[in-house]
Image (cartoon, rainbow, N blue to C red):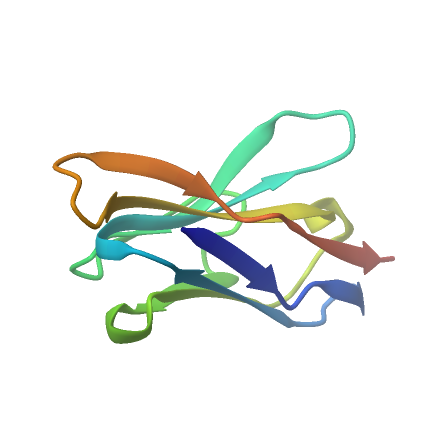
Length: 120
């Protein structure tokens, strides 16, 4: 199983970026998919999460600016980020809680991270 994230880059304050992540491999089902971020010298924090049924939750700091979505048929999750601020600068990681084929339990998987830099 592999999670591949893409879409990071450099953007000015107030700009937008869209991150994408695709899960591939021997996947039976995906439960929760999420985006986390880690700024330099800080811990990794949850940004947004979406259930298999489409229920979403956001960190207070991004509510109203970021939108998480997923396409279950394609095993993808996206994060649309609008009105970006310098404090959004971080490495963004996608995460999936999923069931691998022939396994009876769920396991946690992480993407490699993609850097988002917001200039002031």
